[in-house]
Length: 115
Length: 115
Image 1 (cartoon, rainbow over the protein chains, first blue to last red):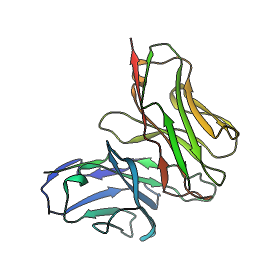
Image 2: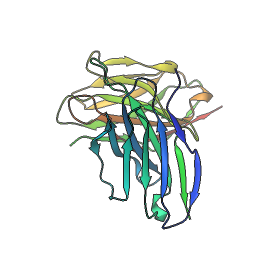
Image 3: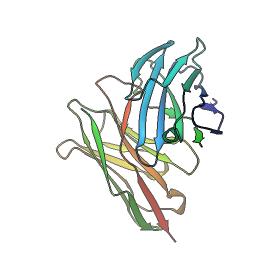
Image 4: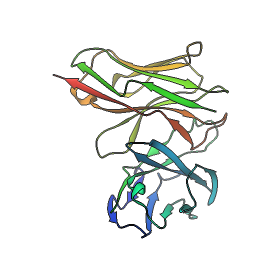
């Protein structure tokens, strides 16, 4: 079974631009979560999507948004990029089957550098 | 509110020595607890999880952790360190009673293994 796939793996943007990151979950997983990882703040939860609906949201400004498609693939978008948005963005999927303990399966991340 | 504290941002051991990585949690409800490992330029991989079934949890690569409610701890151990264990380790707690894609992570502990 293929793992969580994130694209692109690396990207460089300049301040003020916007970026879209993509995540394909493990086949059969319908829940997708996004995390931001930085040296200073560590791993922080951005949002979770299930059945194309946002179920949970972290404490990030409105510049950070996401969506999920009917095939469970997800995208996140960051508009008006700031230097502080430089980070590793991790996507994780999980099964929500009854009895599943809900561990997250992570992709390798998209490393965003904002210049 | 749930929180996780990992004691020691860096731990250094000799190859063959005991590995002990400390994690304390704060939760107002019975928690789900996880340990993840992250190798350079990769995503997070689940080592083990506690979901109230057994207090001593065995994971992959010879790691195990013991849930101690009285101490609110979930320390990770391995009897004999291997060079390949060098990585960053994260303890995490699940938010809420039911499984969720929102985890609260500790700040991480970098494990160095010396030959």
